Amino acid sequence: MINVAKEMEHLNKLAGDNQAKRFTGLWESITSEIWLAQAWEEIRRNTGSQTPGIDKETAKDIDLNRIRHLSKKLHDGVYRPQSVRRVYIPKSHGKLRPLGIPTIEDRIVQQALRMVLEPIFETDFLPCSHGFRQGHSPISCDARHHSRACVPLPFPALGVGLGVRGVLACPGCF
Image (cartoon, rainbow, N blue to C red; front, side, top):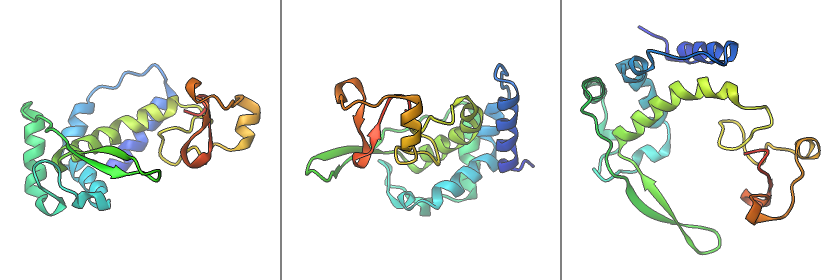
Protein backbone atom coordinates (compact mmCIF):
# COMPACT_ATOMS: atom_id res chain seq x y z
CA MET A 1 0.00 0.00 0.00
CA ILE A 2 1.30 3.45 -0.88
CA ASN A 3 1.15 6.60 1.19
CA VAL A 4 -0.10 9.16 -1.32
CA ALA A 5 1.33 12.21 0.48
CA LYS A 6 4.77 10.60 0.75
CA GLU A 7 4.64 9.53 -2.90
CA MET A 8 3.81 13.12 -3.91
CA GLU A 9 6.77 14.38 -1.86
CA HIS A 10 8.98 11.74 -3.47
CA LEU A 11 7.90 12.82 -6.98
CA ASN A 12 8.67 16.43 -6.07
CA LYS A 13 12.12 15.51 -4.78
CA LEU A 14 12.94 13.43 -7.86
CA ALA A 15 11.84 16.25 -10.16
CA GLY A 16 13.80 18.83 -8.19
CA ASP A 17 16.96 16.72 -8.13
CA ASN A 18 16.95 16.01 -11.86
CA GLN A 19 15.16 18.41 -14.22
CA ALA A 20 15.71 15.99 -17.13
CA LYS A 21 14.13 13.02 -15.33
CA ARG A 22 11.47 11.11 -17.24
CA PHE A 23 8.78 9.69 -15.03
CA THR A 24 7.34 6.27 -15.79
CA GLY A 25 4.65 4.36 -13.98
CA LEU A 26 2.55 7.44 -13.24
CA TRP A 27 -0.56 5.88 -14.78
CA GLU A 28 -0.41 3.08 -12.21
CA SER A 29 -0.36 5.65 -9.42
CA ILE A 30 -3.18 7.75 -10.86
CA THR A 31 -5.46 4.77 -11.45
CA SER A 32 -4.84 2.99 -8.15
CA GLU A 33 -7.76 2.77 -5.76
CA ILE A 34 -5.79 4.39 -2.94
CA TRP A 35 -4.75 7.35 -5.12
CA LEU A 36 -8.33 7.84 -6.36
CA ALA A 37 -9.64 7.53 -2.79
CA GLN A 38 -7.24 10.28 -1.67
CA ALA A 39 -8.32 12.41 -4.64
CA TRP A 40 -11.92 11.82 -3.58
CA GLU A 41 -11.12 12.90 0.00
CA GLU A 42 -9.75 16.20 -1.30
CA ILE A 43 -12.80 16.72 -3.54
CA ARG A 44 -15.25 15.75 -0.78
CA ARG A 45 -13.93 18.46 1.57
CA ASN A 46 -14.83 21.10 -1.01
CA THR A 47 -18.36 22.51 -0.79
CA GLY A 48 -18.54 22.21 -4.58
CA SER A 49 -18.73 18.43 -4.17
CA GLN A 50 -22.43 18.91 -3.47
CA THR A 51 -22.94 20.55 -6.88
CA PRO A 52 -24.15 18.01 -9.44
CA GLY A 53 -22.67 17.63 -12.91
CA ILE A 54 -24.76 16.66 -15.93
CA ASP A 55 -25.33 13.21 -14.39
CA LYS A 56 -27.06 14.83 -11.37
CA GLU A 57 -24.72 13.01 -8.95
CA THR A 58 -23.12 14.64 -5.92
CA ALA A 59 -20.75 13.60 -3.14
CA LYS A 60 -23.48 11.46 -1.61
CA ASP A 61 -23.30 9.13 -4.61
CA ILE A 62 -19.62 8.20 -4.15
CA ASP A 63 -18.42 5.32 -1.99
CA LEU A 64 -15.48 2.90 -1.99
CA ASN A 65 -17.21 0.56 -4.46
CA ARG A 66 -17.65 3.47 -6.85
CA ILE A 67 -13.93 4.32 -6.48
CA ARG A 68 -13.05 0.67 -7.24
CA HIS A 69 -15.26 0.73 -10.33
CA LEU A 70 -13.68 3.99 -11.50
CA SER A 71 -10.20 2.51 -11.00
CA LYS A 72 -11.18 -0.53 -13.07
CA LYS A 73 -12.61 1.64 -15.86
CA LEU A 74 -9.37 3.62 -15.96
CA HIS A 75 -7.21 0.46 -15.95
CA ASP A 76 -9.33 -1.14 -18.67
CA GLY A 77 -9.22 1.99 -20.84
CA VAL A 78 -13.00 2.37 -20.96
CA TYR A 79 -13.34 5.51 -18.83
CA ARG A 80 -14.63 8.47 -20.84
CA PRO A 81 -15.07 11.95 -19.36
CA GLN A 82 -18.56 13.36 -19.59
CA SER A 83 -19.67 16.74 -20.87
CA VAL A 84 -19.69 19.47 -18.26
CA ARG A 85 -22.82 21.16 -16.99
CA ARG A 86 -22.73 24.84 -17.97
CA VAL A 87 -24.04 27.41 -15.52
CA TYR A 88 -23.63 31.16 -15.46
CA ILE A 89 -22.65 32.94 -12.29
CA PRO A 90 -23.02 36.70 -11.74
CA LYS A 91 -19.94 38.88 -11.62
CA SER A 92 -19.67 42.04 -9.53
CA HIS A 93 -20.22 44.35 -12.52
CA GLY A 94 -23.53 42.69 -13.44
CA LYS A 95 -22.32 40.45 -16.25
CA LEU A 96 -22.41 36.66 -16.16
CA ARG A 97 -19.41 34.34 -16.22
CA PRO A 98 -19.75 30.83 -17.65
CA LEU A 99 -18.77 28.02 -15.33
CA GLY A 100 -18.38 24.35 -16.31
CA ILE A 101 -19.23 21.78 -13.65
CA PRO A 102 -17.76 18.32 -14.28
CA THR A 103 -19.32 15.13 -12.98
CA ILE A 104 -18.09 13.85 -9.62
CA GLU A 105 -16.17 11.00 -11.30
CA ASP A 106 -14.49 13.43 -13.68
CA ARG A 107 -13.51 15.66 -10.74
CA ILE A 108 -11.92 12.69 -9.01
CA VAL A 109 -9.88 11.81 -12.11
CA GLN A 110 -8.86 15.45 -12.59
CA GLN A 111 -7.78 15.68 -8.95
CA ALA A 112 -5.80 12.43 -9.22
CA LEU A 113 -4.00 13.83 -12.27
CA ARG A 114 -3.28 17.10 -10.45
CA MET A 115 -1.92 15.19 -7.48
CA VAL A 116 0.66 13.41 -9.63
CA LEU A 117 1.56 16.24 -12.02
CA GLU A 118 1.75 19.20 -9.61
CA PRO A 119 4.66 17.89 -7.51
CA ILE A 120 6.64 17.21 -10.68
CA PHE A 121 6.03 20.50 -12.48
CA GLU A 122 6.08 22.70 -9.37
CA THR A 123 9.88 22.43 -9.38
CA ASP A 124 10.01 24.12 -12.79
CA PHE A 125 8.46 27.35 -11.54
CA LEU A 126 10.53 30.27 -10.36
CA PRO A 127 9.84 31.60 -6.86
CA CYS A 128 8.48 34.76 -8.46
CA SER A 129 5.90 32.83 -10.54
CA HIS A 130 2.57 33.39 -8.84
CA GLY A 131 -0.19 32.58 -11.33
CA PHE A 132 -2.37 29.49 -11.01
CA ARG A 133 -0.29 27.84 -8.27
CA GLN A 134 -1.40 26.60 -4.90
CA GLY A 135 -0.41 29.07 -2.22
CA HIS A 136 0.36 31.77 -4.79
CA SER A 137 -1.85 34.51 -6.17
CA PRO A 138 -1.66 37.99 -7.64
CA ILE A 139 -1.90 39.23 -4.07
CA SER A 140 1.18 37.23 -3.01
CA CYS A 141 3.18 38.83 -5.80
CA ASP A 142 4.31 41.84 -3.82
CA ALA A 143 5.78 45.18 -4.81
CA ARG A 144 9.31 44.01 -4.02
CA HIS A 145 9.08 41.49 -6.85
CA HIS A 146 7.77 44.10 -9.26
CA SER A 147 10.51 46.57 -8.48
CA ARG A 148 13.20 43.94 -9.16
CA ALA A 149 11.96 41.56 -11.82
CA CYS A 150 9.45 43.25 -14.06
CA VAL A 151 8.13 46.63 -15.00
CA PRO A 152 4.33 46.52 -14.81
CA LEU A 153 2.69 49.02 -17.09
CA PRO A 154 -1.03 49.82 -17.28
CA PHE A 155 -1.58 48.32 -20.74
CA PRO A 156 -4.24 45.57 -20.49
CA ALA A 157 -3.96 44.75 -24.20
CA LEU A 158 -0.37 43.69 -23.57
CA GLY A 159 -1.36 41.47 -20.64
CA VAL A 160 -0.08 43.95 -18.11
CA GLY A 161 -2.11 46.07 -15.75
CA LEU A 162 -4.65 45.73 -13.00
CA GLY A 163 -5.68 42.14 -12.45
CA VAL A 164 -7.84 40.40 -9.89
CA ARG A 165 -9.30 42.79 -7.30
CA GLY A 166 -7.29 45.68 -8.72
CA VAL A 167 -3.98 44.04 -7.87
CA LEU A 168 -1.18 44.77 -10.28
CA ALA A 169 -0.69 41.84 -12.65
CA CYS A 170 2.23 41.29 -14.96
CA PRO A 171 3.46 38.58 -17.30
CA GLY A 172 6.46 37.96 -15.05
CA CYS A 173 4.15 36.66 -12.35
CA PHE A 174 1.87 34.46 -14.44
